[in-house]
Amino acid sequence: MSHMLLETVTIIGGERVTDLTIAEGLIYALLGFIVTFIGIVVLIALLWAVGKIMGAVRTKRSEKKTAEKAETASEEELSPEIKAALIAAIAAYYEGEKPQCEFKVKRIKRL
Image 1 (cartoon, rainbow, N blue to C red):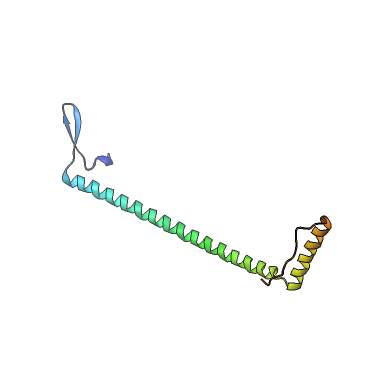
Image 2: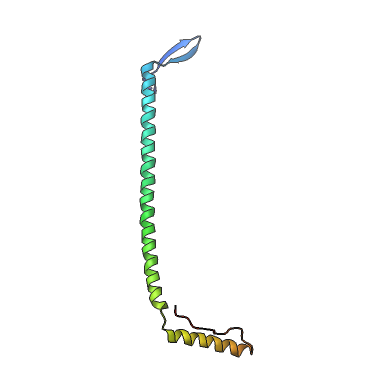
């Protein structure tokens, strides 16, 4: 019965006809605007929260990647003697594999 607080019902020819006054229409419109506004605010808050969460996750991942890159960079730093030894070992392997080796060291360049 509470849904009929603002209704005025008139029975015409055996049918129920609901009268809607201007005041009732304004109340319904105001309620609709309020519900829509609250819905939009909730959606904006959810999107803002998801954005903050994704930003935090992205920051943690980038920090983790930079830490890993720093570790691998320190491990990848080889002295020129070790680089020359590696190239010579590869050349010797391929030379023993085939008499005519396609792999030739033309020059050693500082990186």
